[in-house]
Length: 141
Image (cartoon, rainbow, N blue to C red):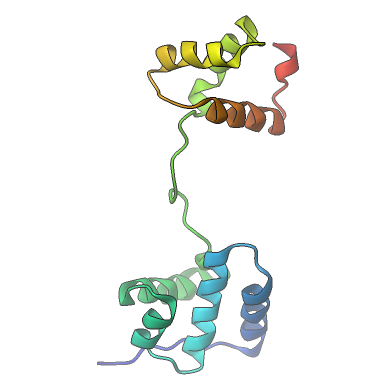
């Protein structure tokens, strides 16, 4: 069986070391560290053991590096928890907030019926904050 290693240039090594030490995303730092160790001669089994992931995951990281470079180390879209309230719900949320802006619990109760979705007051507050942060002016509803 042929062993798989990554060959890195000196500039790629410097970039990956900088990313490993300073990038805010934990998974991105781990993947860059894995590439650095692979370039130093660590085999797939030892990398899988070090990072506590499967061998297939290590192969995926190496393949993504080969195909996409540094961008391949980012998490792919679609991972993580899906939002309960989406862009399709914006108009209904705005309408309900306009009708009863002082009582978010009442707004939530009405929206749960309208949208057939179960969510908490905190979820509604976070959604409204995200609308304001994106430039949607809720003050004019």
